[in-house]
Amino acid sequence: MTLIFIIFGNFTVFAHNLANFDIEVIAPSSGVSQHISKKISELIGKKIKIGEENSDAQVFANTQTKFQKLDKSLRTQHKVLWAVRGGYGLDKVMPLIVKTDYSKETKKIIIGYSDLTSLMIYFSQKYGWIAVNAPMLKDFITKTKSSESYIGILNFLQGKDKTLTISDLKPMNESAHLQKVVKGKVTGGNVTCIVSSIGTSWQINTSGKIIFLEDTNVFGFRLDRLLMHIKNAGLFDNAVAIIFGDFGTNADTLKVLKTFANNLNIPVYKSNSFGHEKVNLPFVYGFNGTISSDNKQARIIMNK
Image (cartoon, rainbow, N blue to C red):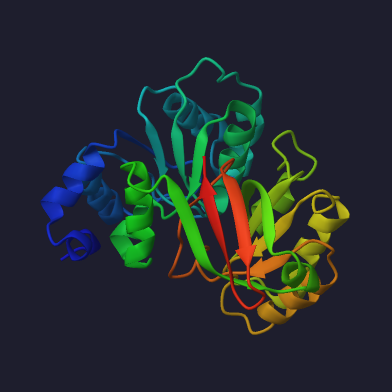
């Protein structure tokens, strides 16, 4: 019995729905086992073949070959580009991506998170493509996310949820307590990937933005270093708010986030509804976000 069966009560119906989404599978980062690849093929209703290289192997992977595969997918007529998994590898390809013109290609929906952050930021900023931070295809097979996480992205793709809501925001600093309403375009993603993009031509644009930030199992001092680098690069200067998601289980993480938030002059909130952990509800790059707060609790509503 697979997770697909658990959610919908009928694997055939679920697989049929995924096939209707016109999916092109992309794997610009790490690969998956043959077993997972086979299960993904069953999930989307067509055969795929994904390499098994892990994150360490990506250091030595052929960049030109990886680019050619991703470039072909970016030029396809398929409506949805859905990542197999994150890991590592995309940063090696991004310099070739930004040198290539995709302005005449069909606009698509890119789905992923983690190492896919750079690709989603770039195509949403440069070409206005829809990019959604949400569970990847491997997550469906390995059952690592909550039911609401899978249903969230599926409802969005089906057009059932044109407005997205995350309701568990908690104010982390004085500005968040004082400002009852905050509005801005949505952006963000994985902290490590955002830091690695600083100074590149695919660097995140944070001016006037509500920034979603998450990462996984980063030790306290390393997380502080990453956040300080973003701050020192000026990327928080003109932002309107920050929402911290999950950062793994390290004991120092929450203390680091609270200390960092208290030294910022923009509202900062904490959520457990997106990131690498169990719950990863969708947020869409470029959507309009409105945060409303009653001091103890807050929520963000996002729509086009």
